[in-house]
Every structure is written in C-alpha cells, then in structure tokens.
Image (tube, rainbow, N blue to C red; front, side, top):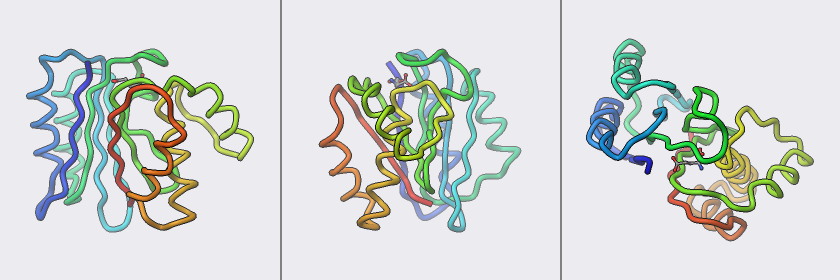
Length: 163
Ligand code: GLU
C-alpha cells in the first residue's frame, strides 16, 4: 500500500509533503518521490531508499514551490528503483498514482506510436503521457484528468500538477 499526498499552499510545501510521507511510512513502501511547481517549472526528487533520504535531498535542494505532490511506492509494475519511483513526468506534468492501470500494455503501445519516449517500466507513466496530450488540447488540467480517466481500466488514485 503506497502513500499519496498533494498540497496547494501559500508557502513552500516540500517540507509538509515529506512530513506527510513520514506519517504514511507505516503502510510500507519501496521508494519515494516528490515534485513541486516552482517559477513555471517542475522540480522532482526521487529516492529508491527511505523517506529520510528524500527529506535530506529536499533540504539540500531547497525546493520552494507552493504546490506539490508526493508518493511512497509499493511496486506492482517495474522493479523498485529510482527510475520507476513516482512522480512521473511528461510535457510539464507530474503524476503520482496509487493502484494499478490494467490496460497499460495497450496504452503504452499506442503512446509510443504517438512518439512518447518511456523512461520507466511502470503502468503509471502512461497516465503522465496521456495527460500531457490531453492538456495540449484543452489547457485545463482538471478537464484533461477527467478525459484520461475514461481511458483507464483498473484501480487508481491519481494526483497531477502542471508546471
Ligand atoms: N502501479 C504503480 C507502480 O507500480 C503504483 C504502485 C503503488 O500503488 O504504489 O508504480
């Protein structure tokens, strides 16, 4: 069981996100990550180790964004590793996901045909690419998420932010 958290705040959220992940550690996980939107770009940190390592990296990097998402992963598709840790990125969008996308093989084949280059072995990365394509159409992340969910089979809680 993974942990998933998102914050839209009025002050830098990285510390709060990491603190929330610490509180979710009891659920078990194999890797952790965080992404914040800051000055029109996304900053992402991931660790194949403990949340404490992520916390140290977040301190070093001094993440300043006021909006962010974070995740502790319990791998179902793709080995536990930094490259498979969430958040996954595509076109200025970062995604974290709890659950399983059952039709990820078909989605990946279709998205690779459309030119997307995969960087992980996860079922989740397809959601990032789908969102990036939908966001280009509408410029509205909530609308893009609603459209993408129609294409997904399985069980999922998803959080996404745009740069
Ligand atoms: N199925 C996703 C993965 O393997 C999410 C797993 C989870 O819920 O942590 O990356």
